[in-house]
Image 1 (cartoon, rainbow, N blue to C red):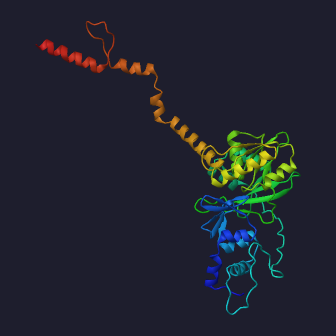
Image 2 (cartoon, rainbow, N blue to C red; image 1 turned 60 degrees about the horizontal axis):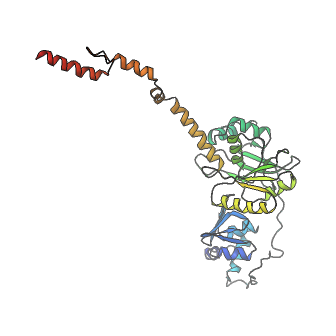
Image 3 (cartoon, rainbow, N blue to C red; image 1 turned 60 degrees about the vertical axis):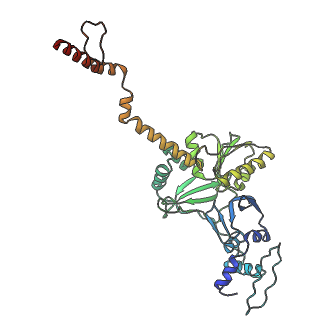
Length: 369
């Protein structure tokens, strides 16, 4: 089939996405008013026609769904959807029927996708942009940023100056890399994995003397929690998603880990994923704790609030209100003493000035009479 008409594209996009997912072997589960892919809670299907994978910032129509999850080319995806919908072009031969419940790649039509080589972006000569973004925008301390740079867990790329986070295996070899833009003040931030990486790994710091590991969704959240707690002893892992593929790899490579803290985002996908992973790993014999952010969506939001409130408190602490509120009692007594005088014929000591004025006025009136 050559170029598709607007009507054909409309038919392809109108296919029920929930039924389609089941027919191509992608299991779904209902969560409230939407559907989610089983084992990939960050992916949601809305109104049975559109979808979004929030952890990767991708989504779209039924066509995009097949291209993303079934690795189809554009023409292949549209043709499949038209066949699935029972559409027959009048000037074309009748295509083979689509057997519901089973999906097979068209023979001799689908090209084997070549494996993309894993090539890390070029490193910048310095990390000025990285320091500025993480310290000013994300409120991280210079100490934690320098610590991660020393551990070779991230660097600033050239020429786009993105932050590249690195995930390594037990031998220290880089297997995973993701990029995060630092120039997003007025627009949507750039996020994306480096092509060819191994998604079974995530950004991690493993302490062989610690049986405990903190599990986060994003690397910046892991940095934020380390910075807030000043905990450099507990092992950490940033999944880069809510799926536990990297966690399984870490547990296989480091058998000494016995306890995990699930520090995922405090939103619907994060909470659902945390509960699911907790049940799974408790049954596997691990000690599991849910430790969601105490405030806000994630740990970096919480850190920013804490740092901003601390800065605000310091400013108030040095304002004029402090000098008034901390005026000592002897100073107040000295001010009062300067505005008072003793009463004649009375053994009452000193009284406020306004009382003395009333007494003096009454004495003058009596003398005049």
